[in-house]
Image 1: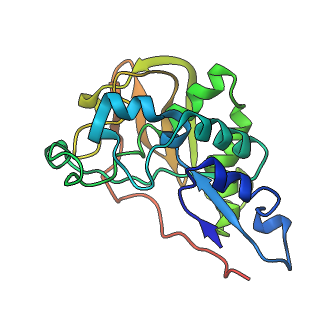
Image 2 (image 1 turned 45 degrees about the vertical axis):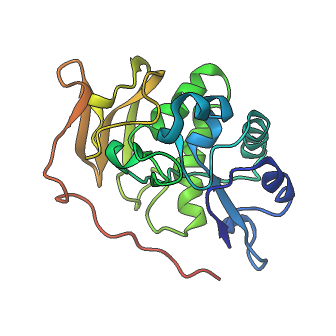
Length: 230
């Protein structure tokens, strides 16, 4: 069983000693779970300030929940970072509660948000690799993913841990053109992404903060293959 989008401290504490990776629990029932960068970052004060931009399900909760989620992530109760990417337009969001749709863009700044926490000393870069790569491949039993080894797909992201930039809506790649982390300065950004060994994205002084695609969309990559769950 994989539990999506863990948000509350009560839930996270309840799952302590019950969750583990499939590779470590052969022959036993498997429970895995995940948390979002949004729930590791925002709390009730941010919702009060930003309103429906931060309206999502499950909702942004309280500072105490956020700290417990961090503790359970670090101790291994939570295995993965997810995004719950739900790009609704600002026009739709402007309808206000309860008519505005729940959800927000989450994919393109997810790694930068977590690398910023590395620079703040909340976790290590090895932690981020596990939470956003190797543990994900383990949870879903992905074939050829999650490691840089002979026989695995050549998927890799190069990062610049010293690169700092403020998140701005105009640099969004999503069609809705906004980002929930707008106005936050993040240090540590992806600068080159390769899929199957082929560079597909670059961020450099020449491209500007938004970066640029190096290939036609959909021209690189192949379907994910996963082993059966036992």
